[in-house]
Length: 316
Image (cartoon, rainbow, N blue to C red; front, top):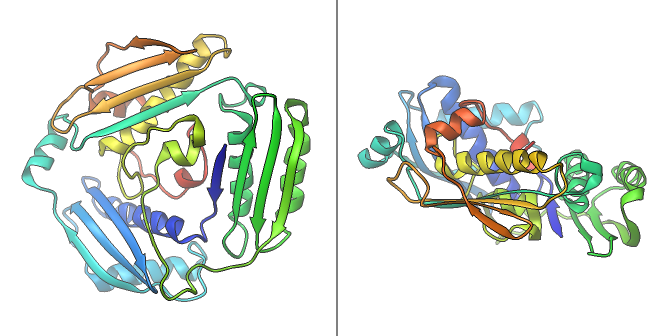
């Protein structure tokens, strides 16, 4: 089972802003490190975290940058972004030492997953595949939307989709038809529900997108630290992307007919994970290789900018 929401939900807006600010610094200084959290409370966004960059940005400049995004529709809101508080400090000298010397700058547990499903398209179960497709379409809705997709062990599929308009219903129904050979129809509900959680003056939200929860749903209960606002030098995001790629590689090597779960556990200040194991159809094997941050970065294709696309899609 998996639940996904679109960008109009406050938590996703906070995730988006955290990644936008990451991109802002990396655009201006390729040597920047960022670890940014965004909190929303009663009408205002509060930005916290750590930045190491040769580029120094003022609160006014950041506000102008976010306003520019609004003008071009990249951040859909009915009212302007109000940054109430900006508290971006610098990384400690110890953290910078860790980053520069191929050590994990934080502690985390990351999980990669792949299994038979959806006609062998992406090594993900059918409910995850459909939720990803629905979520991509729901990003076009004018307000908050949510979808819950679940498939039982007997292949019975249930869908509960709530959106402010019916504009996404035809697409989502067509996707159900495309994949109809892989499930038995259960409870399928498409509902019109319009709401804006920012209208509540006491509403709140925060960044903290976790790949396992957002992408694997109930299939993977262990989750890493927040990923939004972290660049690929941060071990949370780096190891989470790497273990998904490794899990899919192992899945392919086993003729795409197994369930694979790869787990990495990193401890701050260490180069190698304290735990690196692969579980294939319930059988555990401990992995021995160079899984240092630099090796993982090379494995996933090198450092690059990460953006909102990572929040709405699975990791291929």
